[in-house]
Image 1 (cartoon, rainbow, N blue to C red):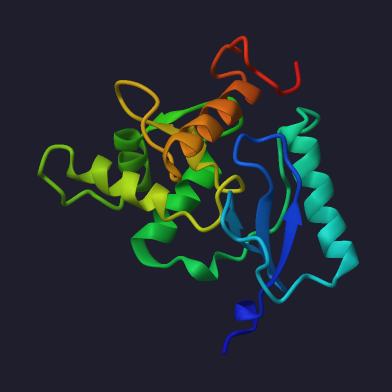
Image 2 (cartoon, rainbow, N blue to C red):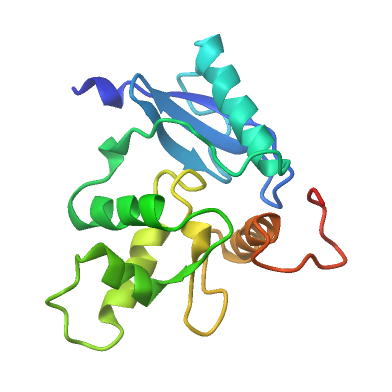
Length: 181
């Protein structure tokens, strides 16, 4: 079993509409981030320094004090085209910017042989839904050509996407905005 599969979990309280983040860490970095449904994952992270670093950086980011999470990523839960698209997003779409599903497909270079209209964009949408390191690899910054697009988790997921894009200044705050100003 690869060393990166030795995951331990921690929970980070957040102001997100979904509640706390559940984060899996390995010796290589953050391997998974869940917006909900992972409470009680085992084994629990007992590395206090690692837990503090993740908690401090996520908290600062969501409080608007930092535009970078600066955490190492363990890419072991991704491979092939999925990893290539996620790494393109991670490298090419900075804080406060968005990209459409189709634009990300083109940027990644993964879909050069696809000729069916819309297929590459739909595939990128599915890849974003399967992003194991959400927030660190900012799938919330990938939007539809005609609007916000989707986000895992149904209505709460869309509210998380809207919250994060408001935090980053992409969207204007609404009257119910509960984030930093």
